[in-house]
Length: 283
Image 1 (tube, rainbow, N blue to C red):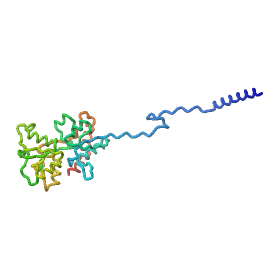
Image 2: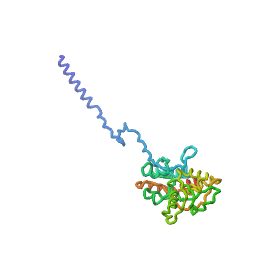
Image 3: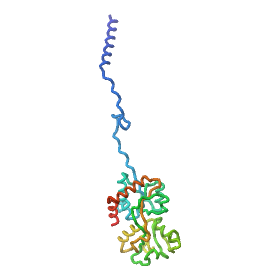
């Protein structure tokens, strides 16, 4: 009796399991991964792409192009132009203040992507780097003390002590004059001394203190300084004795960035952005 009871119980249990299995729902199919490779229930919100950076090298002792204000902030024409470029290109701008005599080496060493620092476009510089379309027309002018009349033009440089910022085009022009090379071949000028400074404010101070006869400087730098310190210095003429054009310097291989910068500069001149920045610093 016990044997039959046990057997019946086994049969009943088997039937029960069979019925239960037939009435259960099929197992859910695994969900397909969501975009990004993660299952939908485990996926995380997609993070925005990191904004590319435009690294700008400059010498922040060249007002009104670039300088450091009383708050310790960079300011100037080139600073505003660089920030406008960053906005137009969708890039975050990072500035690096560099001594002028090493600024080009830093670009070639990839310490920054561009130089926006009142750089004059010359054939010699174009051999080593690319330049944007010119964004400023300038040239070299002569600054003297207010009460000094010993220099009327560059033809009066003989026997004079002249100051420049080291490695600038003013330095190069005076060197060619003194050596009688380049455009001054056969027209050598016996300049008594060319004194080279790390920045123009140092040269201006030496001029005011009577240690120089004149300073040769870029027109857009010399004009505002002479206007601000009219009681101490003056320009021999506001017409440059050497015409020059300013551009943004880049490495030779960075042609894509060069094309984007040129397109942005063209747009700025068409939509009034350039004029607005210019008027802020030069009017």
